[in-house]
Length: 288
Image 1: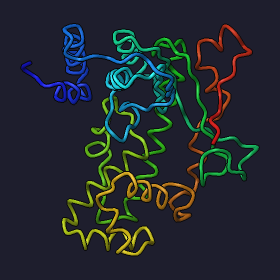
Image 2 (image 1 turned 90 degrees about the vertical axis):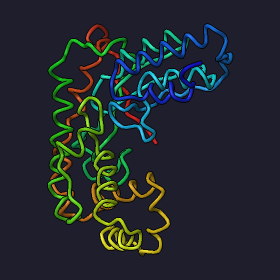
Image 3 (image 1 turned 180 degrees about the vertical axis):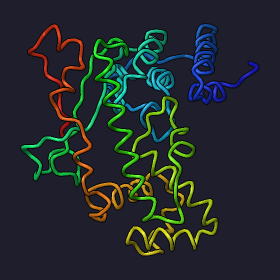
């Protein structure tokens, strides 16, 4: 075996689609040769996996998620990305090749005006709700303009957030085009990408752990000693950064007017092709 299984699985998460395809081809050849034995599907189901086309904390691509789910014996797996359907075709094709039952969908956040003072299912964001649609068989949907609009709204919202957070976190500041967008293969950055980029930039500006802990402690309202224990725990530190600077729990001046930058629920429901043929179809809102 010239290339190890571990290396091929790493290549499945490449940002280059051709490399992902080649890695999956090679892994399936190893299955065919008996060098990899895939288990019988069990009873585990996971229908809410985000890919690198929105944000995955482990950097998992659509093809990798299909492969990992099949290799771990899941019975069914599904992907859902924020504001795009970019992963749908790759994931469903890979799932078909590895013998995995699969589904694919989209998730977005919408602003529900009648409930603007109530927290729905987006913690700390009154009036904002997560809305989902699933059962897409292709990323090629009839209403391409609406799909493009969802992505555009999200990107404009991110830029607004960054324009406010940058001065607050100076001297740790970001360039959206050069330091945020390259973190995602389809140019669909999220708030979590902003946090990842801020974390990386702080390591450059403050290479000393003590200085970096003091910086984050001051900006996030935490004791430096507590922050220091999180410096190597990226998911927790980045989650705290998001909560304190980008969510409703952060400084009011940073969040003012952000809710108006979310789409409304009605138009999002039209995106699902089944909605056009069957008006009774409902696109679910995520519950806690």
